[in-house]
Length: 424
Image (cartoon, rainbow, N blue to C red; front, side):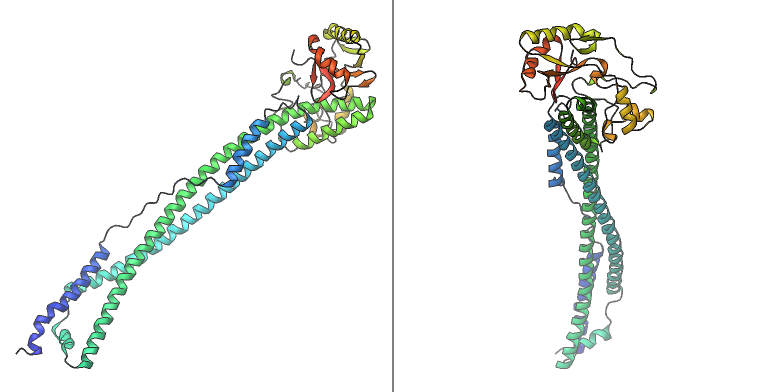
């Protein structure tokens, strides 16, 4: 019968196997597959703010087609509102995209910092496990140590099991830490990659929003220039007509003031430059306030003074209206020296203030001299039966709408009384 002592050499390989198994597991943890991860973030879904901005952009494109010189007051005001909302919407999208790009970049930086620290923790755990593995291979348990685990008594057996379990738990804890640290590192690297991708996406959105904002602002500025040309016409008429018909003058001035408020904050894209009908007929401000536009040759036809170049057309129009029972009178040429005086009073005394400052920049809004067709003798404010034509239902307007084109005169739709030679 073999004694317990003589059996010890056969039990040694079993204990060595336990240490060998631990060493193998440790080495597998150290030299396991390389850590790496990739994440397909995909395109960031278009958020409601961007969707609303896209809708506003389309609305602004439609609004830009509303002719600021010829459309009604309500139509022009609606177009201006659509363009203002478009600009504000694009500004909001740009601001949000930049904010999100900054947040994502900060998240990426923090995740990379966390990953760096976790990587250092992982290196320390690997070194610790490596030491265990080396010790297990190089210094297996000795004979004396193993003999202590061969006791026959129950108490000694319990002690032996406790020691083994303690060692097993200690070994297992280290391996669990190694695995969990590796998993945490993978998560942090994935989070950093996702945040980087999000930052790049938001940066691209910001660049697109910046371009959209630039387009929206240019569109708004071009339309505001048309509106300012309209103001030059309307305010000039208001200043003159108020002396003839106070109520009509107040009505025109109120409408012009509303338009002026709508464009007062919009930068000018050029003095008087517009892209609507008649916009190519702008005059160039003179180099000096003492060098006004030359007065055209003038002719008075049935009490209406106009440029001599259109006198025959005016005569033919008035005779044709009279033959149809419509008695037309009115006012044509206006000397713009009075307008210069108003600009000095309301805008300032510099050359820029007198000739170039947008009408909405003055207080109250005041038309620039030289921009009204009346100042060129090419426009008439018509009266029918002794009163200004202030509606499209007026018999005088109805006749003119049907016949004035034959004589080269066209209506400024926002002003039923105003007819001039633009478009010819």
